[in-house]
Length: 114
Length: 116
Image 1: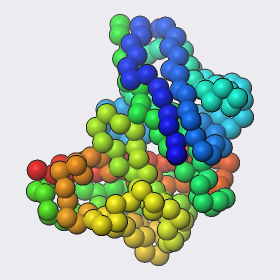
Image 2 (image 1 turned 90 degrees about the horizontal axis):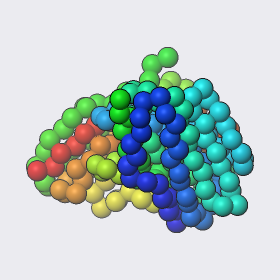
Image 3 (image 1 turned 30 degrees about the vertical axis):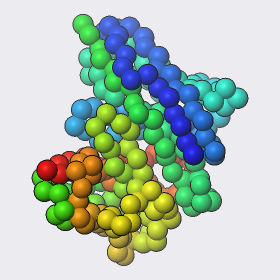
């Protein structure tokens, strides 16, 4: 089975940097994704790490260490609109190449304060 | 490009009643997913389709939930009969095809179900 751990809540100041950690225990692993979800909204894709290292997309970066079963999402120059829930999700292919699936963590609620 | 469409957006029913949700994925997307998201938790996969075939329904409570994807496009998810614990947001997502290196799933706005 799959198990993911991430903090339930984080609060940070506008303009600051925040890091959201994710650790996982999985029977299969092809990569780690991050999704953002505003209250009442749909999850939207932020980033994907299939290999160890850092991926950067604008103000957001994501890191993966497969040997440590650990990843993080780094948000820089925080803005009020970044207040949302952030989910890490493990990509697996439990039924073979045609069955790519995501197992989501419980999410981290980020509150950005002035 | 139009996104994933879902309807209805909200539904309130009494326990033991039936309910159906509809999803229209992004045009050309071969893979379609239904998720259940209980308040305060992450989305949980219920069923995955590749075109009109089921790839994985291992987490679908088959005694009360059913889903179909006729002609490999639209999909419906049905609950019959509903229980109080089925209160959740039901999300539909699609991706171009399974196994692609693209890795992104595109989610619809969801249907918020309340069972009284």
